[in-house]
Image (cartoon, rainbow over all chains, first blue to last red; front, top):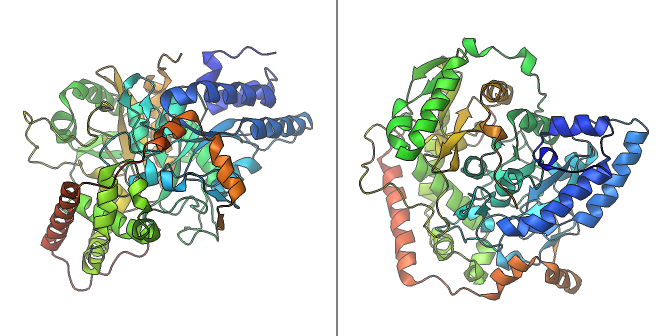
Length: 477
Length: 67
């Protein structure tokens, strides 16, 4: 029987696949070791929504039979994973992190989970999330049926949201990779706060069939992993056309870093004010080091900033308008009062009164955002900014506590609204761990034009060959 | 997607992890009035900010997000 040490629990998919092929352990042994670890340690971080150990072990035995017959299905074959509890898995609970849906079971499995199963990857558990992915606007880390997402780097801090369990489970080595979702920052935030690599794909590249809808025009599904290359391997499997998803772009993704431009040929737009003034003081040294590492790749750093547009207000209006349409029955029935976060309850109820003209205005502004950002990519290949301006907040603090009163808001907006702007425009983003502040991970994000995932992942891989922040592990006991 | 809640499935909820059950045991009350006021104020601010943006009449709402 193989001995499973931290070197295995924190290994990348590529490393685990090599060990499986070398028969250092079987898929059954690997899946069982991770599933037991997830069941044992997941609750410590409020990361586990539902263990699926028994079914996972059965599937792992099937994978071993295939491997014995040399039926190889790719690098994810035999690799265990976790999925945010907003993805349906036939016959199992799918709570959306919210008390009113605590007993919800669907008959169908989400397309992304079906695709992963077809390649022989094994789902070992559903992972905790912020209730309803935080669509009503939440104020505290405790806005979840599962309690506050706890950060493996410091149990007094939040793991981020809304893919809270996905971030903490990967960071703590409870799963080799996890699926999360992003409407406006829900992959980037937990990835940054937990020190893992997260990819938000272009809108429409990954099917959302079987995922909880929050905002039909903004929801995306993506991976959280130990490296950029792992994100590429997962994206290759979960992307592709799906007739069951009306938003499907009918495009696939094939990971081809060898064909991508060298970093020295890339023009990367950034705003110095993001790193020097918007960033929290404790995080600035790490961000400076990250900028230096990007420069060392040979890429050309060019100062830029986003056009002056109401990104946050447009994003909020669209998500709330579409979200209350999705959850109208929940709100009108009064069941919304069962949610954990009072701000979210108030946000959803009040949003019923958003006039159509505001939604349409936000969607028209979105058209302008798409045009303006597209024109920026005429002169630039990638936009770069901090994923979040500081490390994870304390669980006891409000999550949007804003800037310290001693620190005035910078006059220059720089790329500070890159997360809402990128989500409005449906653009891909890659969050890369880039150091520590106050003992907690911080990260940068790379944003590219639509369907430029290969470019972002190639640059991410280059960054991670020059740094080892993605290899850092929290003490997990 | 079919969504069914049967008695059998409700019983399955009993197998939720302990953290889930702990969280579910305390039923929160509805939001206090001042939170509703805060939420309304936020919507008003959003509306005001959107209203300030000047848009050509020809700008249609975004309905394609594919490129």
